[in-house]
Image (tube, rainbow, N blue to C red; front, top):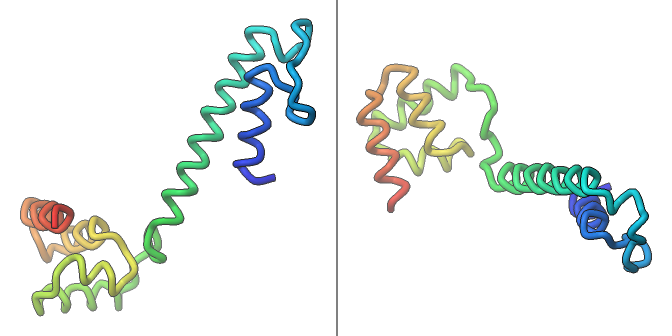
Length: 125
């Protein structure tokens, strides 16, 4: 079951509606008890959070979060030496600008302060 479908069902139950028929649930229904309604509301929040995480993950570049190889380290060092922008390096490697800056800082190729300021300039462009 997809998150969106589960979310619709749990929302209906939390609102006191039968998900199959659309009719109002009886006041005596277990789903109408305050602790159950609160639990369903928490389930809705959790599903919405999970849905947003999936949406954010899908918008990340293909290599976001993946390990760096020695070859890729060498390549980004060479690219920065040649004056290629952080934005372009990120595009070439299918990574975020933040990950490029963080990697270059870790490799000692840029300082933390210059890397962060360059990354901020790239974001505002």
